[in-house]
Length: 357
Image 1 (cartoon, rainbow, N blue to C red):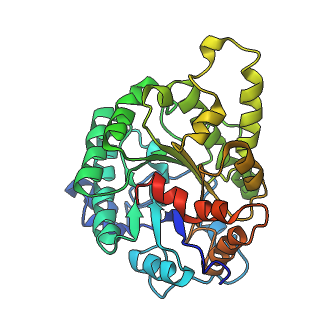
Image 2: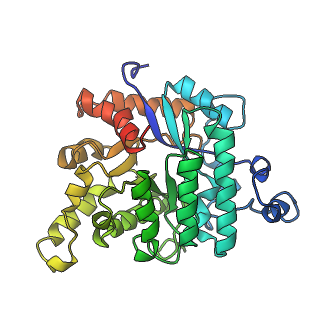
Image 3: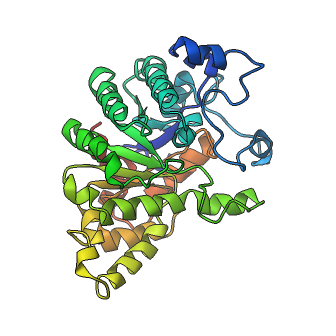
């Protein structure tokens, strides 16, 4: 492989949950719902939106997918095989079904299902190998409970941090209602990560009927909202050691935000400006964006804000199979518009530092 001389860390792979396996860790009330087929229409998490259906998944890719093993795709065993075959040192893992956790409207239920999920990924993934580093889910619908669950996930279970839902919550993530969570994350020295995935309500995509059209937009848009919220609503100033990642929207959207932010620095009330310039937050090492090797804007952005805020993300086993993941790593390793040091930073060093691996 053309990347044999590089170490590689995947900053965004995906667990594919088994409801049957996860049921072992559920409260009796949730287990009763999850394990009765007549009542179990969606597992234990809400639907992402009106776009993500099995019919789409079956027809999304016409070529035969090459998974890493004979194990269930997205299981812990499959992930270890994938890391070995793709020559990846370790991976930070995010939920699949739980990307919709922000849409849960009953706080008590959110608390129970997040706790069950965290116990599940600890026992079925983290304990299997320290190469598998699952991010926790926390019930942002109940902020004190989210603080407690974040602390338990990091201190007791040893998980690296927690995912924040990019869509679904009643308030934007930078709202001061959620600040106790960020205070706790700063104390724990653990990263938080917004993860795209849902066709978010209010973004103008609700009436789209073409999945690909929606997909182009519904990943990056909530990440754009999130990063601007964290900067301009003062979260990163109030918590100067907090680290926040923005996953599965690529990096190209950042160029537009930088242009808009730098223009507005000259035209609008200084009282509405954050403590630093947007590019300074990006240079600080406290922000990380998952990227794919094929993105043409990586080199441009690296020259503009530095390379420290970009990290390789596989997305396995969602859209990307084993050969596609290997190809995307090779694309980074072979780029002639990045230095060897910059390629290594994107392929492993930035994720290792950011996630305390």
